[in-house]
Amino acid sequence: MPVEPPPTPWVLTPAGAGPGEDLVAVGGDLEPGTLLAAYRAGLFPMGLGVGGGPPLGWWSPDPRGVMLPGDLHVSRSLQRSLRRFEVSVDAAFDRVVEGCADPRRDGAWITPEIGTAYRRLHDLGWAHSVEVWQEGELVGGLYGVAVGGLFAAESKFHRVTDASKAAVVALVRVLEQDGMPWLLDVQWRTDHLATLGVREMPREDYLRRLREVRSAPLPNRWRAIPS
Image (tube, rainbow, N blue to C red):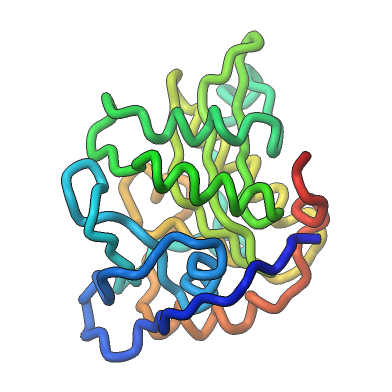
């Protein structure tokens, strides 16, 4: 089971944020206890500076991009693409983060400090990756944080068409496999994610559903601390 880190000294809450106000706090740190407290409260970190640099911002989008049980949509063309790929879980966490952090990507925001912070969460059993392979090469993936029935997807990348979508499909299969309640948080809905079934949810509704799932049992696949 994941190891609980020391608690954060910071108070992290979206209380007081106005409708449609996504950025709710600035400052704090990236200690494991701080990150977990943020996710449990419905927040996630992203720097406000160039390339995701400081100052550190804490976000709670309104509306929130989510996927719920039964929402996943796999088109016929994606079904054909999935046959080309192999997927794994927690097999190459650092390489997935590096792929997501590639500075050549538009809107790159993952700094070395962010990468280190999530590696520490991974070592404690809270952060996980899904890898997509083609002919032995890593061609896509995603990483995020699992707290009970919540999976907060932080970032994804692809090097061939449909590889990041394949990672999302594989992630949903993990969440579905034990028949427990779950919530997939993707931060913001995009047209790309909408094709998979991602919807928008008002922040108030998101926080209510988060409270329902964050104390649910972890999916079995997440219960072992990655080696």
